[in-house]
Image (cartoon, rainbow, N blue to C red; front, side):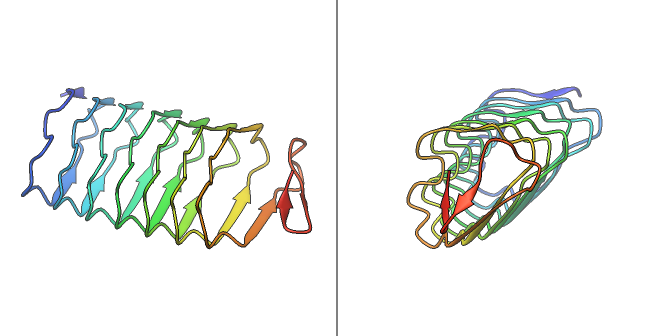
Length: 173
């Protein structure tokens, strides 16, 4: 199996744990959409693509580690995962798409790799428990409202080697 097709497991309300085989390179659009009982998913290092809304509305998923072989996170890929607390983006990821983690209201921690260059519109909007953020060295673009309504975001730091952003008096420029 090299791909999980679009919508394959969408609305499977009893699915709790998934280990994606090493042979899989692609997870399709809405593949696990609103799998409301999904608590844990293991993604293989062979994975190259995760489609838009693939895990949208998986309300019991509490952490995710995305391998760096997935260079571009598509729009709304983990949107509405209201129990998601920790996100680890693997080294090699270049972009986080529009609304990728929007409405992840319990999100507290995001590990961004130094390879990250782009954060899309509303990518982390409504992540109300996110309180700190580190801007990695190669990040060049943060689109509008990328971190809007992150009401607890009080600490922002920028990698010393980043030539595009800086923080002054607690404000990101």
